[in-house]
Image (cartoon, rainbow over all chains, first blue to last red; front, top):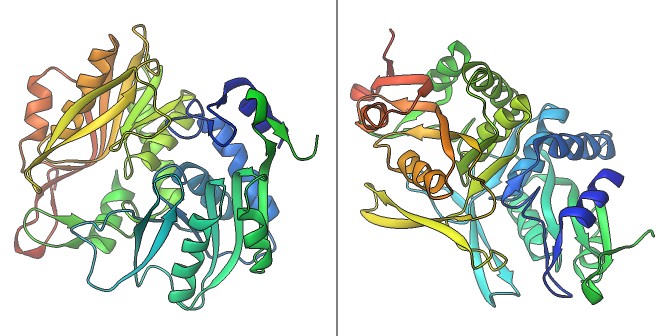
Length: 191
Length: 191
């Protein structure tokens, strides 16, 4: 997605060879027009996947997931990182390992949100080591539903998440694939 | 907003006389078409307010804020409840008191996100005691900018947040105003 790559180059900040900060249009400030285009791209990519629901993880996944759900005309669910007071006893949960913080963080999904006949598209802002996406696939599979695909806004292709998801047999589509953040420069895989 | 009220009555769950659960279309599962209509209503209500940015608080405010920013064609910023690793040293912060949890929770905004010439529209999912909205006004005022208005999806008019915001001189527009949740029933202010 050329417009996304342009924004990554123009507004992204390379913190180090592992971390790209995109707080200007995705993770803190959001560009709604860009997110609309992101949603249109995901909707096109998964048009034939029979998607009945979109699932993401709060908070940075919500904007691209919402725009994708709008285009596909299906509900959007965000898994929660904290168990809210109003969440039912019947809650699906799994732990997602954070390599940066070196801890397992629980995520929660109310159990009647996803039904066994659902085909669920996972949308997330970043794909690095794949732990978040794999955690969401576990929640979907706990609910007895099917993973229809995984849409990623920015893939760090130099980390092993993509190959883990490919090996697990999921259909992955990433809008921007970054091959390197070395030397304070963003390089894309298809350059 | 009639469609919103209809959804509150049909899909909302009254937990007790203080708490309404709207996890089916706003707080856990999101209805993108309804959120689009919510954004259109806010954009109309604040069309003359000279809004340059929309500010909300993660996570449940993001969907209505994003759709409002899309309609107004301005960026959307979500204040964070946790300080992320990639947030700069120059960060604005304030504490928001939670009556339910009886603690003060910090929220964070990177300091160069909002500039002194900005006119910022606050969007939030719920208005109860007004602490969250007032916290966001403090962040805007710390940045030297102007609060252009406050748009609320669901106002619990039987709590004192609305009168606090009115008294502070802010322009508040709520799409659904709930006068009571007593007896397991949702009553609206203009019924």
